[in-house]
Length: 201
Image (cartoon, rainbow, N blue to C red; front, side, top):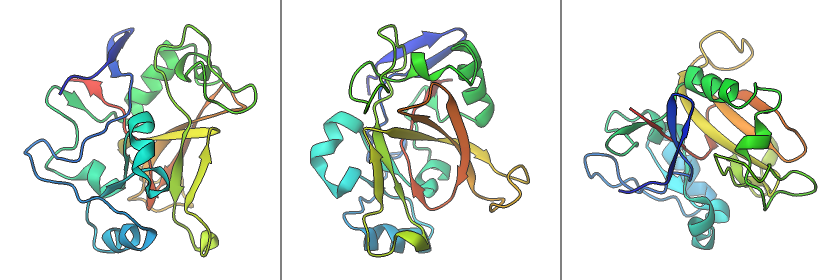
């Protein structure tokens, strides 16, 4: 698998979202084609992926959205030579791009973001505003997909632990870029569907 990449200080990052339907050992990761399928696989603690809006037309642009079980599966989602970044590696990336409060300028793509949200023309990460999938009790009856053109979010391999005390310790930290903000934001999720970027080993 050949991936587009960029050297950012001492790290080498993919500059496109992961788009694999297999683990490193060749095992197929099942696709979820509906919210019910996504919820069922989460309940069964099974890895899965989907396209934004469960529509394959979005795949070429944004890649695949993965659940947390795909990210943490011991069969390894990242291709040979790569790994999914830890929270610490995301922090290193933010530091290399001017700090967490302004890194978005260099990380967001220069087109596609709503309003004045585009990144600079010298962007080096090309983060596209592919939205996210959020399953909560509050969105029952409405689409679980949100924020296309306004946000993108990426998994880390780091568990929450006790840092975000109001969230589950086994949820994972993730990082987001938002259209109307220059900063990188950091939060915790469990049953979300987010994108994956990898770092060279």
